[in-house]
Length: 247
Image 1 (cartoon, rainbow, N blue to C red):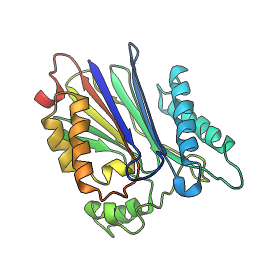
Image 2 (cartoon, rainbow, N blue to C red; image 1 turned 180 degrees about the vertical axis):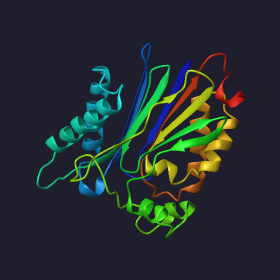
Image 3 (cartoon, rainbow, N blue to C red; image 1 turned 60 degrees about the horizontal axis):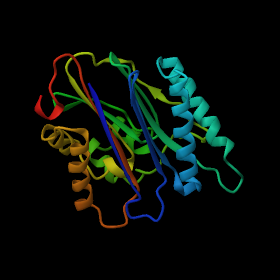
């Protein structure tokens, strides 16, 4: 059984440049989160263009393989660039999850993240394509310091940019056991820490409850000028598994 939920908010900004899309049907689930780079202008247009393009490719069954997902991101990149002009070089991050009931597959560009949970603990997560993530990998800062690093917002790859190539993960089996997935923009994960994600997951019976619990943490932590934030949650229970919060 697969259940889903989503939230999106402009946060402390006047416009929401994030976009989110989930489809849960007999063929499985596809979830997409994109975060338009407003500093380049047209962030809202870029994120929506990317989500619309990637969702079309899902309906065309392009996302069922590693190579297909790469091609889908390439199509999304072309769609974003089609909207660009000399005065508005819009760009966007994107993260995509597809589950067919047997396997989960995901890919991302930029610093919108995916977390995979099993047994209420993070077992996999994407690595940001950012300057601060490189600093973590080089041992210059700790993972905990990444959220507050001076180069936190310097994204190395984005759809519509000169470097846009996605990182696409190997498919993982989800036909047995209990799994949860969280896709989110940086405006969400900057304020909700990984230990809190795990703790609230263990106390939540549904993805809606999980997102609500994490959003309360976020709202208590922000100072009013925070960025847009968006998250999509997916619970996947294979075989005789119980709900994620009770597993």
